[in-house]
Length: 117
Image (cartoon, rainbow, N blue to C red; front, top):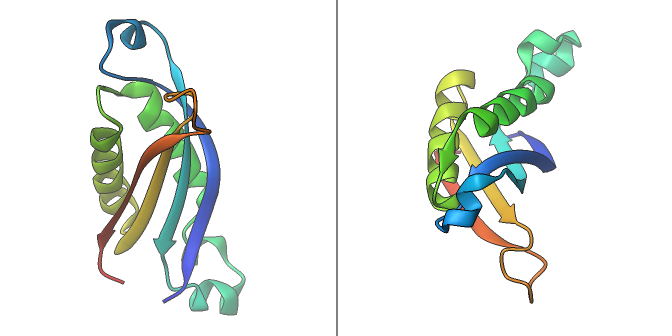
């Protein structure tokens, strides 16, 4: 199966369990890999037959701005469901990195895989 990917998409959201984290937006970095058959789009050279990564990116940024979660795990799970339902994605891998959460690490987070390839 082919895939469409987005790497290091930066979004701002309210995320965290500590009181101070709930008072400000924090930056998350997202990597998405989404199953999509690109043959018809390639054959017709037509955007309407592919998974529009610009539209997906905009949807993710809107989602992040409109929601607030304590856990990165919750953010990941809810976003995965949202993207699969909205865009008809059968399988995706989503990695969310929270930079600066652990000072000794460049980033921490979760990576999930949902659906069937």
